[in-house]
Length: 223
Image 1 (cartoon, rainbow, N blue to C red):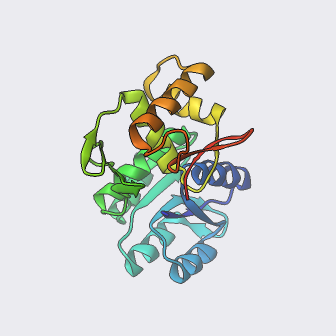
Image 2: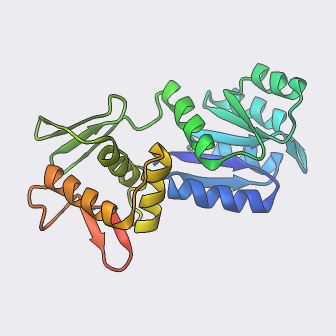
Image 3: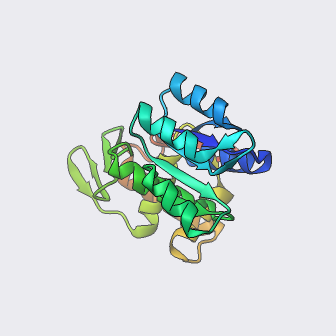
């Protein structure tokens, strides 16, 4: 699981962002200031840092410099400051990207995954029950044979992979596959796509081990 350190002194932003990223399969650690951030980073295996420039007890620039001095990992600045000086200063310190507040969570996650891929830290493959998903190539095989999925089927599978360990409600899954392509997908259509995925991926679609139903809640990947 990808570990992200969120350094932000606005408690509401920290909670909303932590909840959203947890839903996307990230493990979040949080710090509300410069000293705490550097301490947490030095004591934990962190894969990516989301860093506010303006902190109550110091500067995000100092944190970025300290982090890059200890280990070269992705750093994305979160900033309400749109001035060119702040952006340039952050990039010159080694930051990999920046995103201005307010931002859309989906855009942030996309930018995070892009940076993680550049560092070779993003998960590239997923395997379960004879099924192998090569995320980089968007290729799916079962027992070595290629499995052909429609765009919606593949997006649905990726949603489950990115949230392994969690149960996704039907509403959450509908949001994932609808937002991704702008297609109209209703609850009945979701049932059809779950069935199609099981038919293609499961040894016994009537007793699935990959896409499990959680009664009265939704779906999750098998153990």
